[in-house]
Structures are given as structure tokens and as C-alpha cells.
Length: 174
Image (cartoon, rainbow, N blue to C red):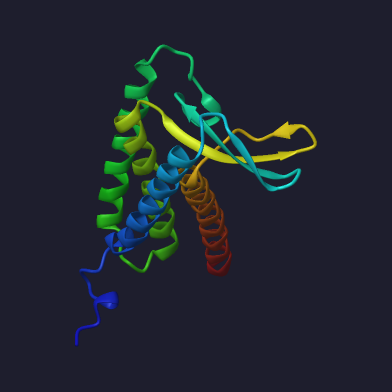
């Protein structure tokens, strides 16, 4: 049986299973919240720290441009689609062995597609995770937002550690 993981043809597209899984989890959780909660309804999960609170986000992260009249829906959709295409091309060109980068791209892609689906279906993104502490509230978010955030953090960590490895390699040459 061929070893596809080490095949010269194996690319970062092998990580799309994770993209699909996270997209499904994102959409299922949003459907659950929209079906079980009234808009702005909040249910305590962990007292004083974490609630499920159903909100509509017409903007981007932190509700950026949420009160801009609707044009932002199409701008954010176009940006997310463009980023998704770039990530897919990059993953196609990446060898499967660049697993940390491919993992980061798969996470970001899942989040982008999850939020684009909401924007296209509803005109807004469904958010519901509500983290708070002593009167301080982080803006509500969803599974797609978590995937994007974790993917971006992985990209930053990978860039930092790759840079350190390059400097270590340069030191070995001198």
C-alpha cells in the first residue's frame, strides 16, 4: 500500500478534513443557538465567567463597522473569500510536512468559511460565546472566530520559531 503521507504529491490540502469538521461544528452550534435562544437571551454556563448569549454581528471582529448600513456585509464577504482562495492555493503548494502552517491555514479557512456562510445566509454572523469577569465583557464570538484566532496565533508562533531557527542556523555557519 502506498505511503500517501510521504508521497511527493501529498500537499497541505490533506488538512481540509479539519476545515470541514470545524465548519460543521460552527454551523451546528449556530443553528442550535438560533433555534434554542431568543435574540439577546443569555444563559449562564459558568457563573461570573461564561455565558451563552445569542447576538447578531453585522460587522467584523469586535463588531467593527456593524452600524454602517449593510455595505460591510459584502466587503467582509469578499475579503474572506479572497483570503480563503489564497489559503487554498497556498495549502495546495505546501508539502504536507509543513503541518504547523497547514494546520494554521486549515483553522483560518474553517473560520472564514463559517462566517461567510452566515453573512450570505442571514446578512450577519451569529455569535454566542460570552466571556466576562467582574463587569468586563469580551465581545461575543463563535466557533469560527475561535478557529481564526487559534490559526492566526499558530501562524505567529510558527513565524517566530522559524525565524529563531534561521538565526540559529546562521550562527552555526559562522
